[in-house]
View 1 (cartoon, rainbow, N blue to C red):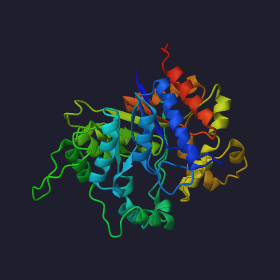
View 2: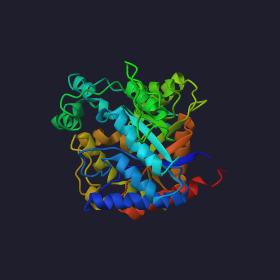
View 3: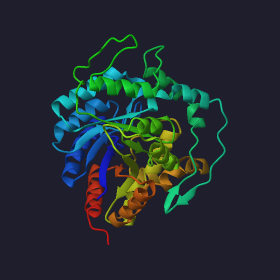
View 4: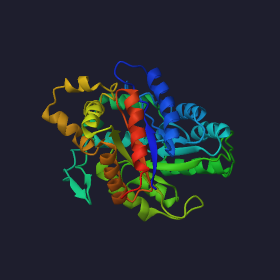
Amino acid sequence: MTALSILDLAPVPSGGTPGDALRNTLDLARRTEEFGYLRYWVAEHHFASGVASAAPAVLIALVAAATSTIRVGSGAVQLGHQTALSVVEQFGLIDALHPGRVDLGLGRSGQRKAEFAELAKKAPPAPRPARVVDGLLIPEPFSFTALARSPLLSLYGSLLQQPGAESPDFADQVDDIAALIAGTYRSPEGVAAHAVPGEGADLRLWILGSSGGQSAQVAGERGLPFAANYHVSPSGVLEAAEAYREAFKPSETLAEPHLIVSADVVVAEDDERARELASPYGLWVRSIRSGAGAIPFPTPAEAAAHEWTKEDRALVADRLDTQFVGSPRTVAERLRVLRDVTGAHELLVTTITHDHADRVRSYELLAEEWSRPVA
């Protein structure tokens, strides 16, 4: 059976606090371990009043301490904001206390400062029509051109780095991390450096990506497992999976490609109730894509009070159209389509509802349905 895993943003509910969100994360980790999920990953987000996962290594350590068997990890560490050494030391420390359970997921998000600066100067790309591939919707790509012009985005990028700092190439950082873990790191002059803790840690490296670009190439060429984002950038998931497989070279880690694909999911006892619980999602995505950052997750009533414009709806259409919402059977059937079309070996589920109990129940219902034999 295809494994189900979890990506958690530690969402802050409307009327709640970051402390509420973090306590909910620890409770959800304990509960989903009981439900049989394979991994519990936490994301890295900054400057968002509705997301509390700003320091993934700290949160992962807390999740690991609150659980006993589920794998824990990052989805993903933004390498542009940290050095290879700091990442290895942080995750090596967690592994020292919870050996054999830690996934170190790496992403390029923090390295896109220069790319976004160039993107802001360009006209939006020509639209690519939506299409359906064997039952899976591949929507029209979202253009990040307007978002790249946001002054807030530029400010946030500068605050996340030391003044004048330049991020190394992503591939070089991945190689440095692997070498520090293996104990083989050498400077260009041949001088050795050893990470303590970190060297010799039983960390599983993952690369996360949203397209067929550098992340997919690096994962494939180094024989690492790869996580493709259908929940963030659904338009690029097939290109990402294909690029990864085409670039793949067997390694000591993997003899064959291993792909995990993410999905936004809300499950309830019936389709109508699930749609109600998921109704604030569009307003939440709108806040992100308008450049304001994720707001505290609204209640269904707060979402219903929002007056949508044509521009608002266009801003979030791809994310709403690719969210998996419904009864356990409805969602499980759609997730099997996602798995089959992408060739995923695992599915990474991310669920956000206003009330914590509804989120826990969503994961419980999905796990129960997913474990049933398919007729």
